[in-house]
Length: 397
Ligand SMILES: *Cc1c(COP(=O)(O)O)cnc(C)c1O
Image (cartoon, rainbow, N blue to C red; front, side):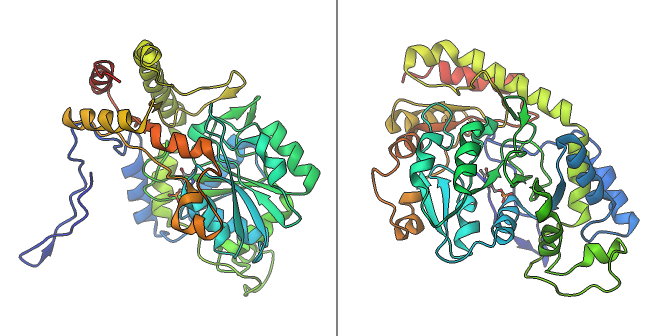
């Protein structure tokens, strides 16, 4: 995979080897637009700290494309999630309901504030937060719930929002996979009080490390700006709304350099091209693997008819852990890197400290052993993809 060691020869630091050793890697960062040109402009323009011209252009892009009250780019989706916990004033002892099958940051952001994560299982078809288990997980201490739109296929948001309103539980959507996806015609990330995006290297749009906080609840906008700017009213100061900038709240530094915003903007400008290339890749896997999957007892991704997905990933749900391990090995021998992810959070070391136990989320426990992600990135070529497909259809489950 990646060799992170930095070797020093004759006093010069060599950049670490990052090229994958696999001819067909799992991910390869793809730059199809004006990334370099915009980075050079940012360097020459002299504003490389946060909220320079490229950051502002990213904010306007999201606000107009998503029609949301406020978009603020952040240093990561993890940090955007931490901001949501601060904005909701999550206190020690509060409970936050999360899917057991997700990335650690979904939980950590709230655990950092002293909250107790309450893990619920996911649906066996979409791997999404199971709305049928949501209501019974709510107690008097529940403050928030964080559905994750897994693989950019929306959760059952009508049911989730109805239950949340009934109990006064705030919804934060972890939309790391779901930018531009839709549930019943409505954009993912526009349902909850807030949602978060990721621009990590492995996501559809990337600036290496980055994210965004989307604020749908107008009443949280001003405080979101303050928390993101070290707890100061600096953005109001720059807009001439106050004549001094001071410490007004808790906060941290969650704004990325404008250099990263320059990279991100170049990618956002190519939204349609990036998404249509990814759609073609997704569909090529789906049609190329369909009959093999059917005869081998392998489940391919399920996209309900009322969802528009984002073509973030393509996964196989193998019949067993044993067959998954054999397929990973067979692909490795052919120079293809496939990966799996999300060990059940409730069974992790931290999850167990919060009472997580075997059998608590049976769907998560089962699929976490069987799910396999295939190489998927915007510049994956049809030839490369065909090699992956050939290897898989030759594989005897
Ligand atoms: C990638 C990811 C994150 C974290 O994103 P970063 O930008 O790396 O912090 C959070 N949640 C989910 C579901 C993710 O896939």
